[in-house]
Image (cartoon, rainbow, N blue to C red; front, side, top):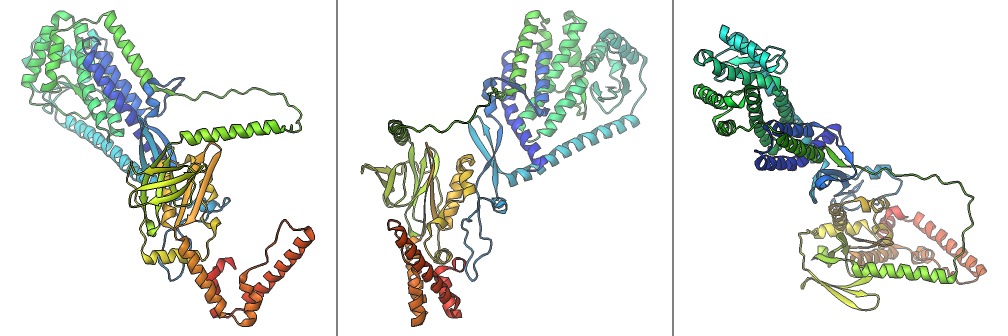
Length: 625
């Protein structure tokens, strides 16, 4: 998986987690808006922006609010698809399972798709790696596009400000100088009088500029001009331009999450409330009425909301102005109780957002080396007790196993059922084992399966949970091609590959079902079941009867092509059976006769004519000579 895809999945994980925190902060904002100072509420949004941009969390011995379950990325093998390396000549392409070897690295590399899973409050969300890679590229293009647009807008604004600016009056310059001295602003910003804005604003993170509309300073009284200047210098003192840049960066990285854009909008409004609170604390609560009147006067003169790419204005909009006027007219000085409440809530929010449950380091205990002891032989009573304990454990698991019939179908005319055993898929047909029971009947018409326990008791499962499962369909041509791939019924050919069996417990539920259905599409029924002592498996060919019948027909056709001499030497391809219960001398004689028969049969096969060889290959298969 590429570094870009990994970064994108990490951003998605943070967005899911942050969506909950945004809702939490919105609720706190609504409930405690009169108890928490505006400045601390705005600080909460900045903590959230930092959370959206910080790629790591502080480990904790516990999981606050269970957020560790959310956005927990974990790769899982799913939907494994296998295909033939070399298609059989003159036969349609039929997908079927690879016969993998445990040591084949190339075979393991052929596992085509792996899914990326992450949990959202116990709900599993899955996407393939290919889709994740595509979405990662789209995400990166969105981030780059937003940052480029903002940078272009900032450069365009600076270019316009250099060309469209008017002289600064003495009254305005003196008001800015006195405001800086009163508020403790050490760096006096550049003053720009320009028709590009309709309300006072502050822009420029690195080189801040105080923007004033043309003629506004002349129409304000000295006290009103002081309030206006103090508000913009308050933004500068509080470093709100840097805070807005942090929020803009969070929106750019998480542009696909609407909750982040909502948070940025609310944060901008709370930034103005915090600045109003800052100005009133410096100017005295007695001037709250004059300050509110100044805001209304500036709003009446504004032609609309100025959209500055990296700036903050005195009046951000008429809709938000109502809550600001309400706060100003009902201004409450910041008390120790309100400050403590704000600090406590922010601390709790930071703990929830910036921590996650860490892994407890494993403790190691030094053990003195000891000499190996010879194995202790267990007494018959101890062996019997162990067997009884294992039997009791197995019986308890069988009794508590949750078995649900998912679906019944007839792929290729053969009754097949899919069960869930403890929420794991298990594909069965008649004769398969299912939790210490044998599948003795699959009633397709009535949608029920009958199983017989080892104690001969029977149990019937009805189809009560028909979740959609699509069994493969087979045309006559597909069936012929599958049968042609398997000249004889060889049980070992239908077993699940060892690498898949070894990784079975790490494959997610959807992946296991996809693997079983993929093998079914290739003509093999494979049922995997996990028990208290490991895994078991049942397997058979879907068209086992047809394969046996066709194998018999091919054998007869080949034997009929042999000459009497060849037929006498070949002896039907059978070899002498060796009885392991016979005496050693007799077994040696039997093995010598068997080896002699095999040598004579090999001579017959080596001397076959082209026509006879073709019939032999159709019966036994060229790979099994």
